[in-house]
Length: 214
Image 1 (cartoon, one colour):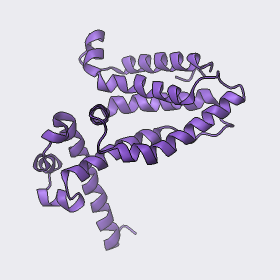
Image 2 (cartoon, helix red, strand yellow):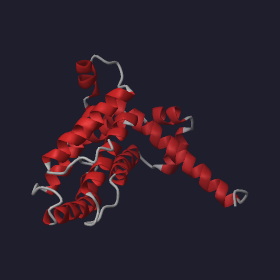
Image 3 (spheres, helix red, strand yellow):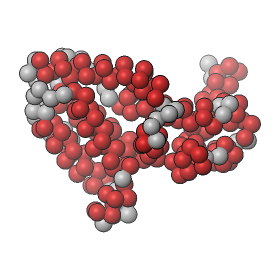
């Protein structure tokens, strides 16, 4: 299989696109959409500018892809849930995954926050369609858990919003948090404490007993 030309080309394409998106995230995080440069993105990725344009015809197209990729990765971190699942396990897993993403890829969260703060002009269609459908599905399961008495009667959407805001805070406002903690960087112990505390507060707030696995 690996010796087939088509397979090799496919691997090269995937690797090239990944390099471009990683470089673009760094560039957009540091300079914003207006200040970002395709030339610098190409240099960061170690490829030529024409190669970037081969995959993405414009800076806007690349920026849109970076934004949707961020949301897709966040969405993928919320496990598939059903009314039969245990809310504690599902919500704990989501909170841990979102915090881990904030720690490992803080620039992604900052790019998203910057786009939303300017009114999400390049992301609004995606948020209204693809993301709204994803959000509706998760909220329906949360409502089922409420009806079954597995959790208190809280608004499912606002619960999800609270998880987003509390987990992304550690990326979007990392300078503020690190300064308050007296740390240059988060340690493993810091993130363990953050995860345990955020999970405890959110789960207890919606009447779910933490599993103790955090």
